[in-house]
Amino acid sequence: RLRREVLFFPSQVTCTEALLRARGGAPAGEQAALPDCCLCGLPHGESSLSRLMRALLAARVSLELCLFAFSSPQLGRAVRLLHQRGVRVRVVTDCDYMALNGSQIGLLRKAGIQVRHDQDLGYMHHKFAVVDRRVLITGSLNWTTQAIQNNRENVLIMEDDEYVRLFLEEFERIWEEFDPT
Amino acid sequence: RLRREVLFFPSQVTCTEALLRARGGAPAGEQAALPDCCLCGLPHGESSLSRLMRALLAARVSLELCLFAFSSPQLGRAVRLLHQRGVRVRVVTDCDYMALNGSQIGLLRKAGIQVRHDQDLGYMHHKFAVVDRRVLITGSLNWTTQAIQNNRENVLIMEDDEYVRLFLEEFERIWEEFDPT
Ligand SMILES: [Zn+2]
Ligand SMILES: [Zn+2]
Image (cartoon, rainbow over all chains, first blue to last red; front, side):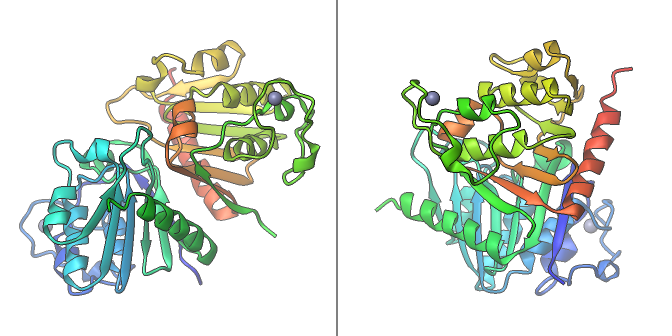
């Protein structure tokens, strides 16, 4: 059965340390695998944010990110972790947002992750990710703490060959167009 | 076969008069049905905008709109046309954007369409529509001319019972929460 999920936000603020520490991340649905020995004081159950992180941390081979805004520290850590594990990560973002306070883009670049951004007037307003050329993650959510915790947003997580192909084609078009060389 | 489409933007600027005039709108795929007698000077072929309008104008019974920003005059006309035809239209929007120049929300209200908006600090950042409780339209696109013509955006059009149910539930939650009484 193919995965077909929607996450609604705002998300409860939960601790995501366990997800970021587990080698490979716990499989989806194994909520009981989260330890309760963490002393951070936050709830340690599932939330829309933890489900989104889990879907990302499932990547083993490749991750394409096409994001208007990216400032969430937790999602930034997740992406850098994947890069450290050898996942091929490529990021496309919007230059107007990239310069703002708290953007994760600088940290991604410093970690050695390939990032390209637009140069033109229109916004690169997509908010999607493709995991292992198999799962599409897309919706209204910009990857900012403000949006995650305060906004009404949706994120679809779909194991869907046709949509994955169409969004990867869009990613490659943008990737080539934003080639700085 | 269930509908399963993605529209990418920016969209070419095309004339959408024929769509707005046809009683019931031409069925999807009948591109040849567009007349070429219009003297507006714009191209009269299909575009992402015309496909989005066609998906909306297919409504016969109900249309739920949950939109952060709504200022496109063409999409505004399409929604008012559906209301005139007796389609039950309900709109939820964000108060921060509603006050901005060029918002269609005032025109919708003046036409007698039910509109509710949030009161709180977080954004009502969804951009989705549900047509006849059967087709979900959702993506990154705010319904503004700026976004349609200049931004890189995606809109999914899905005939999908499960997603429609989940998004209608979200709509009803927001509709009740934004009840002004
Ligand atoms: Zn903790
Ligand atoms: Zn014309």
